[in-house]
Length: 197
Image 1 (cartoon, rainbow, N blue to C red):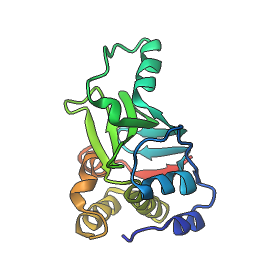
Image 2: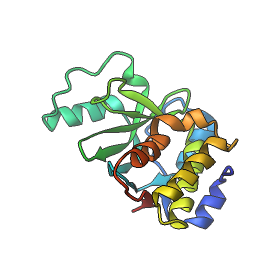
Image 3: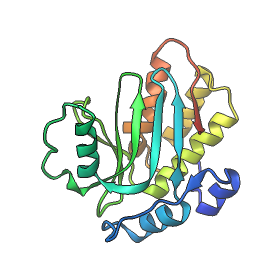
């Protein structure tokens, strides 16, 4: 696993990403995060096929979480009031999986990408510590998925490779990325694949 630059990602998967629109005034994000969002961007849709198929649908813009909270209250989701202190999160995508869903957000100041899933005991957990690390991790999963059949044996090789690489701290991958690997390996035999839609 190596760090993917924006130009490497674009040359490997041309047209796969689209720039993200920031509001005016924009949130306080690290300069490199803002640059990656507005120049490189994020996918339109990311599908992870495993024992708990998951889809991330990226909106193409950063939106205050309070706006998304209100949107989903209007859809009759029973969520109550948004917890105090969550105004630091900016919605970037909706997450859907077989028995639920959540939101993908970027945390103001830190630029950390997180999942907010109200069905979980700990509703906020990290995807990656930065957009740059998300792009690198995504590229690694896409490359692996395109060059393997995603069998349990190949998934074990992916797991071991991620745990031994030194590009991104392995514990950063635990909450989101490794969860797909572990849950797939712990279930009835099924192939794992990741693709951009």
